[in-house]
Image 1 (cartoon, helix red, strand yellow):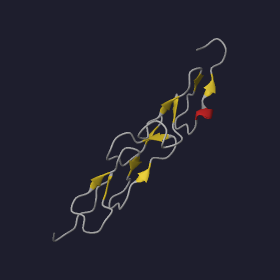
Image 2 (cartoon, one colour; image 1 turned 90 degrees about the vertical axis):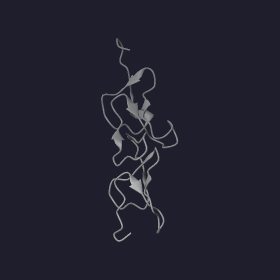
Image 3 (spheres, rainbow, N blue to C red; image 1 turned 90 degrees about the horizontal axis):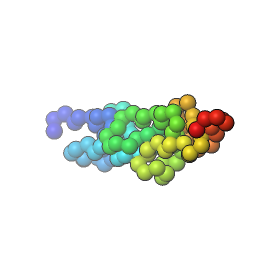
Image 4 (tube, rainbow, N blue to C red; image 1 turned 45 degrees about the vertical axis):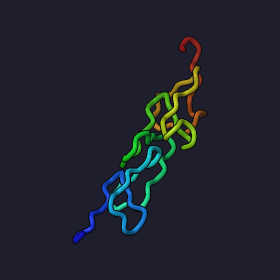
Length: 103
């Protein structure tokens, strides 16, 4: 082409001479243009779809620590008997035991 195009957010082109950008796979994201690779979704956030340019914060009552746990970067519910009102929990231990009188 006369003018190469930058890869859009959420896409990458790893090798020189690539003719089409590739969407980041679930569990990864690319926050800027002109990416040569995608970044792993950070703990406390979810990247469950392909082509993401922004990691989604885990909502209250969920967590995500290890990218290998919970599939493609999905947030995992706090275990039964625990809860949290906070966003972006990074591990199961951040879930709080339910106090007496509530479930």
